[in-house]
Length: 282
Ligand SMILES: [Cu+2]
Image (cartoon, rainbow, N blue to C red; front, top):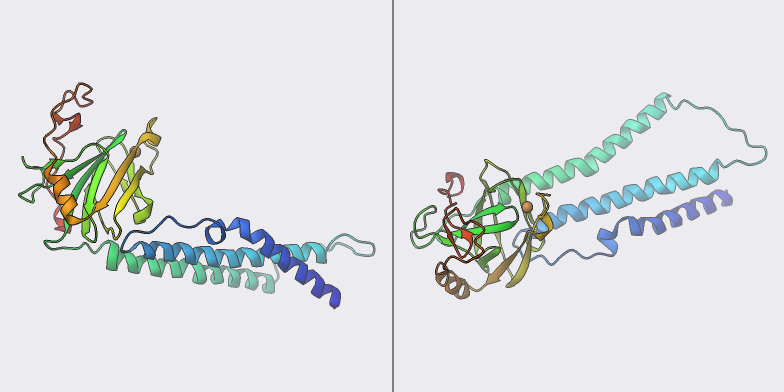
């Protein structure tokens, strides 16, 4: 009996030792700083998955190591052929499958669907909301603000310098995004936002930044040879600073290296690309 206890103890210790590196999310690598109102919801799902999978993986590992010791080749020990199809085996398999389904899949689904319906698909409304249109292209980010009339695709739209997005802090920002060419994805790790931009589709999402600073915007869909250069910057600033920045835009003149030579541009940036704001998030 004492020998079995020893084997069980060694198995458990080995499993714990091996589990650490396999789940770096919990033990070693901190998440990027969360500067958004609802980022914790994303983190909660990721952490739940990490914990449950670490436990499940540890149990499987411990069982594996235990059986390797328990049934190892040794004098006087004969191997037995077992098809593993007795009712008890089938029952154990089904029970394990259900355990995984109920403890992982169902819980994640419940958390995610609640967050989607109550928060991420529940677009904020009102005068306080800032609307932005984003048009990713190979290989840059175009940002567009509505201007004085609050309407997009009109003469007074404000087009930001390439790859520069500014938003006021503690303000809901609703974004509509459609790509110029191929599939891209707007990814700001600090906001916990990763949203595909699909040709022919205007995608709507929203966020609220809670901390001032400059954060990186990356493209997280492999979109061509310059994908890794597709880097933008999100500046979160006070409402006054934001208004000042916005007021100072739209005065640039066309540059020599105009990438949009055939199109209407200001400072090398395509200007005639906006669309009427789509109704679903007005
Ligand atoms: Cu891209």
